[in-house]
Length: 158
Image (cartoon, rainbow, N blue to C red):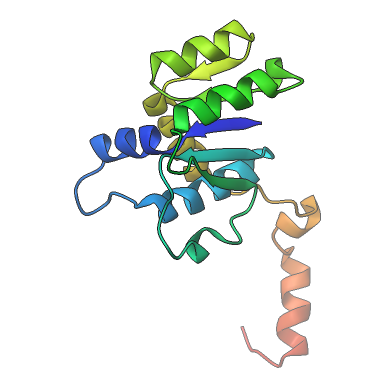
């Protein structure tokens, strides 16, 4: 399980993107959903506040649950509580550059990674081409005699 400090990651992403290529919170979640699906993981992203009035943009994002801390809390506190409550903290990865969260993760022997490092990993993984799951025979070229047979069948002269 990956726990992500939403606005902390978004800030790191915006620091490395040009102004036209910076995703908003919904687009960031969609990118993370594709990443998590590709690596076979699930995750939760927690943003400060109550979020936008219309949260439908966050619906149907694969492998990622989106949370907002609410009016009376902040994302750091929610993430800290999730770290404390986790029954298998060694399997957690906490994504934040916030020292408070990184310390909370380490105190429970959970792994933590700074937001910029995580974003670099996301970009590298998503830039990989999907592996072909085709049989080897399907990836091979036709032999010369097979080509001639097909050309004859379709009445194509050589």
